[in-house]
Every structure is written in structure tokens, then in C-alpha cells.
Image 1: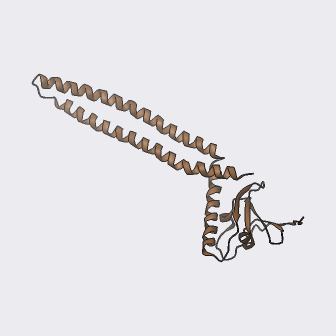
Image 2 (image 1 turned 60 degrees about the horizontal axis):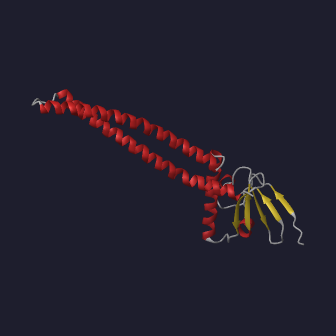
Image 3 (image 1 turned 90 degrees about the horizontal axis):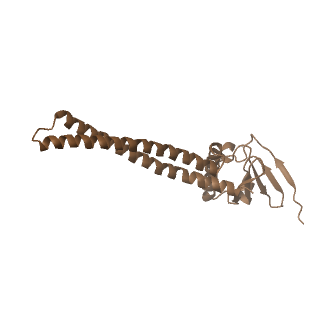
Length: 205
């Protein structure tokens, strides 16, 4: 059986990717480290992502040893490989921020539901206001109709009340539509967040 040696290199400050322009904080979450095997079977654990690790493929582990990402080896001289490294760095930053904000997918679901519940409460309030405005409008319209049937002019105060109530009803209906739009936006906002948190959770051993 091939003997596997363990070489632990903790280079917290020295950049391993000279010339790439990437800081360590951009490549990995705080406390995490990279694991890869060299061609002779030696396992290396590093705080920074080395060229050898990128060529041979590596795993990104958190401080507890759980695998956050498993990456295949690439050719450092290939432009596509460079773009892949930049994309992984971006994803690592976003994952770190997600995990700072949410403990996991269930936590994000609860945050989404709280936001939607607050919007639904606002909708309920506006619907009650709309019903009251509509009732007042109906009353003013009935007063106007009685005056017209009696051959009298509709009092100006009644006409003004009707116009005012119509404007208020229109504004309330616009608010209701905005709240419905906000609910749809909240669902769309949290959908990729929840999905990514699930992926991170499922990647853990």
C-alpha cells in the first residue's frame, strides 16, 4: 500500500499565488484550508491555494475538516482555468457572506417567511381600508343619485367627496399591487439563497 505522508503548511500571510492578484480572504472562508495530493501521493494541507493544488485538484475544507468544495485539477496556463479560479473565488466570498447571514437553508426560509408575513399583514390592513373607502364612496354616490332623481344639483361637497374617495381608493389599490409585487420579489430573492445554502449543506460529509 502506498504510504501517504502528511505535510501541514500553514502560511497565513505569505501569498501562494504570486501574480494572481487574489487575496487569501477572497479565495476561502476564514479558518478554512485546502487539501490536495501531489503526484507522489503526499497529502498537503495549506491555508492558501497553491499552483500545485490547482493543477492536481483540491478540496476546500472548513476549520472542522468538513469538505466545502471538491475541485478538479486544471491547467494554470489556460485562460479558461483562470476564469474558473476567479469564479471559485467569487463563489467562496458569496458563500462566506451567506453563512454569516444564515445558519442554513431553514434559517433562510424562516427569514423569507417573516418578510412575506409582514407584507401580508400590510395587505390585510390596506384591504380593510379599501373596504371602508368603498363603503363611504357608495354612500356619497347614493346621496348624489337621490339629488339627481329629485331634480336637484348634486352638492359640491358631495362631488368633492366622491372625487377624493376615488383618488384614495386608487392609491390604496396601487399599494396593494406593490405589496403583491414585493411578495413575488421576496420569493425570487430568497430562492437562489436557499438553493445555495442547501448545496453547501449537502456538500458537508
